[in-house]
Length: 320
Image 1 (tube, rainbow, N blue to C red):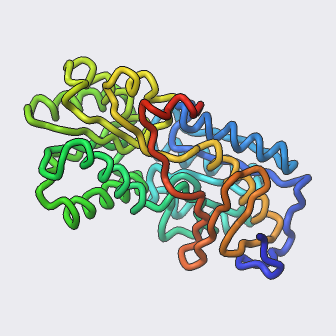
Image 2: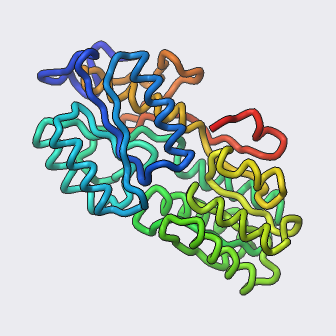
């Protein structure tokens, strides 16, 4: 429920829904994950009467993302949301935007230490990392060898998930060996190469974890090409549409994620509340979402909810 006296504060010159303009800059344009976010965001925009625009770079390129971010700020959008490729690149831009009277929120990935108003988080970093590793250990055992393949090393949220996996391995599965952590350029081809190399270097490799949706197709293709679908457990933070065929063929065992459409919806709703000068109570019911979000004031995080696990048994229930 929205607080009568906002945690954020009633803002001077707060916008009305009729003239609220919200933009979102994803890490990359056009992949199924961000398409699903856009669908949810547009549904919220239509429901709540705000204008919404989404545009991102064609690759996970921090300079291109910064250019798009600055463009939205200069166009005078009330709220610009961003999923940072490189936090350090965006920090000065976020400060400039705030100085110009433009609200900035992060969504999908955070910019810790920046001047952003708050972060719309899909799930806690620790919960995501712990869940994907616990699911892996259920399948490969506590003393197996696994490889990790991520996107650009500048994406802080992905690094946080890797750190959570490493923390979980150290504290709960000390015999588990993480043989490599590789970073791609945002392409499936690079993920394919790293996955193939990991299997070649480690004939007894038991599992591969993809830390970004962009890595999942390449990992699935590499496992298929190797003929190891029955002996390598592969997983990732991937949308069901991205990995459905690989999960059904056995080239990818499971995926851990959330509903990105709901995340897009929550992002636009939260941006509207911010633009109109309202804040959040601890539990946040959102008209149009089934589950309540949670407000974590100490960290200024609006949390969508716990992660979901997609397998061959349930993946056809989800269409994003």
